[in-house]
Amino acid sequence: MASFSETGKRASLPSLLLLLALFTATLRIADAQIGVCYGMMGNNLPSKREVVDLYRANNIRRMRLYDPNQEALEALRNSGIELMLGVANSDLQSLAASRANAEQWAQRYVFNYYPSVNIKYIAVGNEVSPVGGSSWAAQYVLPAIQNVYQAIRGRGLHDQIKVSTAIDMTLIGTSYPPSKGSFRNDVRSYLDPIIGYLVYANAPLFVNVYPYFSYSGNPGDISLPYALFTSPNVVVWDGSRGYQNLFDAMLDSVHAALDSTRIGYVKVVVSESGWPSDGAFGATYDNAKTYLDNLIRHVNKGTPMRPGPTETYIFAMFDENQKNPELEKHFGLFYPNKQKKYPFGFGGHRNWQIAADNEFNVTIPLKSDI
Image (cartoon, rainbow, N blue to C red):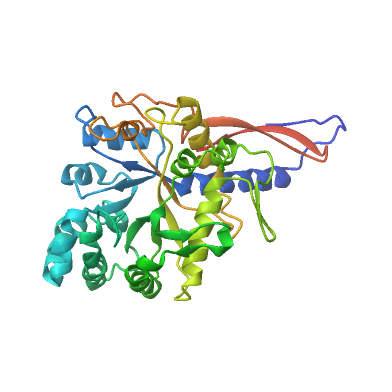
């Protein structure tokens, strides 16, 4: 409600409406960028229906599922929640083997639910690398992506449902400075054809980005404030671009790596990011609270290299007691009893003080998801 300022002038209604519209639009953008990963590796987690209700009660509008759990898909019907639906690594070989297998998978887990389940993405495989423990699966990722894409395209849904895969930061060979970001030479033969597909299909690359692991693995060179978004000043200058947090630097190294392939423009969706509250070095409740709160606030802004909202999925919804090592048990935003671990949230009302050049003085309650 508008009030008289000290100058005795009253805010004009058009001015107030314009400011209200601008602030509301900003908050909606921030709200729209955040999703939460729903992992199920716990023996004490709520039912799938309760979980979907918890998302809705907390105004969490996007979910990532790591495999097509049919009970969860049923619970998502008519929820309005946008879904990133995962293909488990164990299913890649089958989907790569034939178009018919992919058609059956898509019928069972996509077409039987869409559009009452708002499937936006299909993530074919998670953190598969041609080197290391998941190397066995690397040969199947692109054929599986292509077969699933063709199944989706066959129904005319390829503009509504984008098919991609999720990688981690171990595929980056050079990350500093961010503008010199590049993929490792020994993964290029794996990644370049996938990037070519993404350009063709106008699909984003999903990337799991964890400043926590960069910090905890190298605390001598990476400061905690830089990792937690709390550095008061620019920490890294990269030409004319200044980096005040590690998340942006890591993400821009991926942007630069994609650009350096010269295959074509590919958008990046952050398919995981989080901070554990216990279980290892730097994994404290306060650090996790600070990182997650700041991440939610930050993703609306984008990075120095690519300004604009960055779609981001927080890992994870719950602490999962069947994961190992210990720190993997402590990434949840919620405890298994559905209680919030942290005081911030995705929905609620806050009072925003808006003032401009003493023309008016007004306090407006707005719905905010940050």
